[in-house]
Length: 94
Image (cartoon, rainbow, N blue to C red; front, side, top):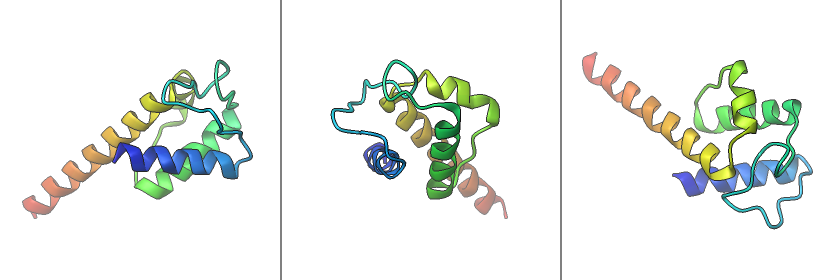
């Protein structure tokens, strides 16, 4: 799942006109790496939310800017898994 998320994030960043050549899992999303500003982080978050059915809080954008690509994709994968587990639990309770 994390590889699928990584591919989606890189594709989305390329569509947003960010140069993703040479980007590795250790590349920071914020100023020390891709240099995504708050508006770009918000756009990326919305795209990820729509694609994977998760939600980010607005106050999480600052934390996201400090993450590497691998940290971000791991966080998204964890949220997807947690959402799936919650949905499965709710479905079995019905």
